[in-house]
Image: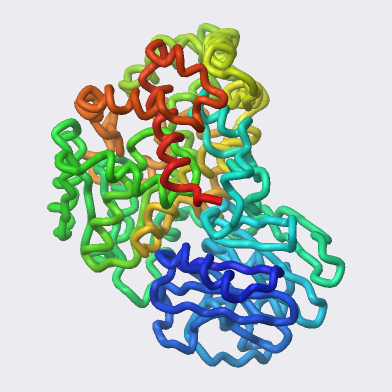
Length: 571
């Protein structure tokens, strides 16, 4: 796991200064090379082959690579390359990636199992190739204005404050959504999409091609979860796991210790407000004889933690759960770990959210819908009456639609345009499982969660690995209509018999939710004053009506204020 960057704008000193903004991503080594008219930079967090010989940028013949990620099956690919005549000087996956590209070109992408964002410069063709993994686990952005630049994080780029996209910002204020396909909160910076291979010509000085590669493979194992977890344990440093006590993280921990203890240490965030989660995680850790490290979050300075999280996220986010995740990674790093396994992605793959209830009822007649809904409510304690009504009668989704419409008219002074996430979701829900999975995995929910996970972990130089976001698990469950028959959310995951009985029967989980009622109550006056006095917000927000804003909207506005103040560099 590392940080990468590149620029055709010749200023090596300024490039080096901007690379330092991402120093947290790779504190073990910094490398900068100038080839032809492009600068390539790399910040290394050493996980595989800790020797200096694997530092980057890495060269092979006419190719130079700067690479962020892990290819978990690199040893198998290496064997294939050796059989056709390639020799290796390191034990790293970096060398495997560059030689696989040399041997097979873009076809090598289909061989990879893992997470990656890399740039390869081909000196012969004078072309820069950018590639991002199938699911966008690893970030990669580019700016194509006064020259071409790319980087792992937005903070690398200049002139962000002058290029805020207010339609995106408005959408966040109204809906809390933070991912919009390849768009960012800044007009001048674009995200490479999941699975995208983009080619920039240094001769023609423009993007000459772009294509999206989706995961395809004939091999699908019946034990995809077990197989994926074991693959994600490849490392030359010790691996730990975060354990919340829910189905997802508990499955990861149990799978990693099914035959022998491959993970010996787990981390849990605990609070008075969700002791139930702690009880489940503690019991599992005890059963598996794991070292159980507990982060007590009740004494955390939430405002200080919020500001720190904002600085490293680069873009606004909705809710304090992201702040608590940030603090957990801080604790993991202080405990000496560089690699952590996370349960992120299971809800999108196995339809774990209650919003998927409408999809489950799609092709059932009314009587069958009622019977099915009764069973769902029995086994899933967090289904509300409104959830049920929206699932039964699609027309009920006009309630949030109308709410957002009038809210936008009420809040904004000038630009009141925004993207209606819920319109898109409900429209796709009428079409079927495949359309919803594409939207949620590639274009919306999962992309936001992966961004939070990456920035929070890399803030403290920790590599986060997400075994559920794996191409074989995806292929097994993509457009798998049997998921729609699960009465209990994620029943298909539970049925894999990885979990002990006491966790299989768990109905609800709080997750990374902070009990912030006391914090908001104690700080509401100061929060209101900060928002009221924000010159940035006053440009487009009717702050005269701030006392009528909901607490949710107020917190989002406060986060935007802090983001503008602490995250965006003065320019």
